[in-house]
Image 1: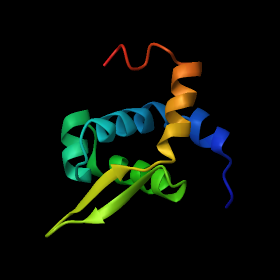
Image 2 (image 1 turned 180 degrees about the horizontal axis):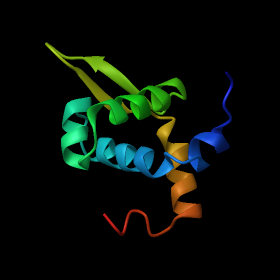
Image 3 (image 1 turned 135 degrees about the vertical axis):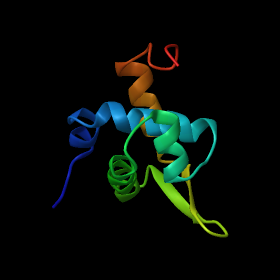
Image 4 (image 1 turned 135 degrees about the horizontal axis):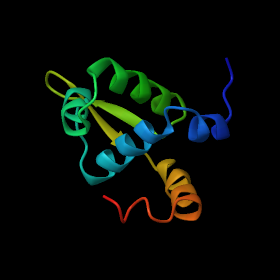
Length: 93
């Protein structure tokens, strides 16, 4: 199924994906760490991570025992969108 960028940014789970992107911009971490930091179910975080990976916004790096997730250069387009469409997003964190 082909999903457009607008669907990624505007669908129901966008708030969760924004939080994940924000956290990973601060510090790369595992899905488990994200779930704890964001007070979300691990499976919810994994779902959104997989979606963000599919769009090339984040990527995983194999750690010794766990995958570490990082934002990619493509995340800049999301950052630009956030600054234009939701200018207070970064201020609220």
